[in-house]
Structure formats: structure tokens, C-alpha cells
Length: 169
Image 1: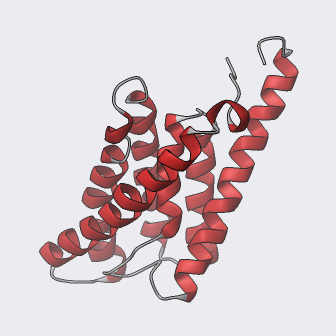
Image 2: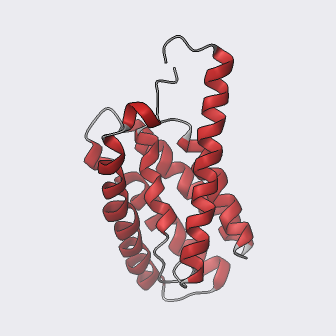
């Protein structure tokens, strides 16, 4: 993929970002149908995708846009529509920053970002109390989504890294 033109690299980047955004929305819809996407106790399957910046920078805007669309389409409150995607963006940037270190550290930034931001969104956007309980349940859900499912996804995709995510720079 080193012989790509700048235009073809841009198309590939946009395509990856759009596919990741679409996957995020679809997986959030599935979790929402099961009652797991919103509220105090949530395990968004889509959060497993937050490990994708380990493979490609296109995942950063893809995850942000996917989370934004998912929160709008599932009827979230305005603070959740604004700050939920910001937490996902911070997590994605952190994962991208750690990509040259240990792949096992990849889920840490999204877990931490969401563990801090989402309980505050639940409190101020939905009035869900007590705050400490939201910190516990959201963190547990993120550990399951990002830490368990995300690392399983990372291990599965690592084998096909060069085919799925060809060099873009």
C-alpha cells in the first residue's frame, strides 16, 4: 500500500472511518434493544471498537461520529449527546497514543474516559443517583465492553492487521 496516491489514502481513511461509525451505531442499537446501551448499568458492545485506534487513526473520527449518531438515534439526553462522544473521542485518542506501547493497554484510555464522564452525564443529564453507584456500574460495564470484548476483538484483528488496515501514512 506504499504506492497509494494521496487521494486513494484519503478515500481509504474516510471509508474506514465511515464503516467504524456505522458499526458503532449498529452495535449500540443491538445493545439498546437488549436494554444495555443507556442508563446506570450499560454494556455497549460498540465500545469494544474503541481498541481500533490501535490499528488505524481513521477509528478516531469514526468512533466519535458513531457515538454521536448512536446517542442521537437512541434518544439520549442532550448532555449525553454532547459529552458521551467527547468521552469516546478522548478514549480513542488515548488508545491511538498508546499504539506503540503494549496492545494490552489499549482499552485503558476509553475505560478511564468513560468511567469519569458518563457517571456525571447520568447525574446531570438524567438525574440518576447516587453518583458513586454510577461510577461503579459504568466502570464495570466499560471493563466488560472495552477490556474484555475489546481485547478479544484486538486479538482477532491482529492476525489480519495488514489486510484490514493497510498502511495509510
